[in-house]
Image (cartoon, rainbow, N blue to C red):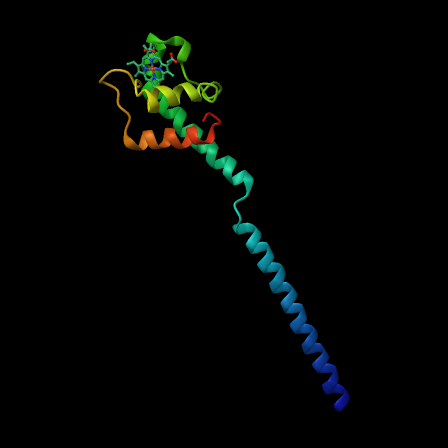
Length: 121
Ligand code: HEC
């Protein structure tokens, strides 16, 4: 009877250790998941770029296509033109040109956030 008791203590102890190891592993996996993964950031920047392209297409290209065909913005060239866009929209505030086309404050914010991801400053 005594031997049986000793044996079950050992089993219980082993069980506790095992549970602790499982909890530690689970905690570790969880803490890794809560760290923002680099691919998540890329995805976010991708979305920002897409949103900005939509703005450039609707608010800028509509005019540029006719009046400034060398500055028609596309997904492929918008990063290269980012510094110019920044200068015209945020520094000199010449664009969007004229009184008809305006950017909403949300569109300004989106463009600014996207420009912050480009290496232009
Ligand atoms: C109503 C017409 C019109 C709209 C709308 C417009 N542009 Fe322009 N943009 C022009 C014209 C015309 C030029 C070329 C002459 C000049 O620079 O004024 C130009 C030139 C530019 C240039 C080049 C400036 C340089 O010489 O470096 C950039 C960059 C630019 N626009 C960005 C934008 C962006 C970004 C938007 C949208 C948010 C926009 N434009 C909206 C007419 C427009």
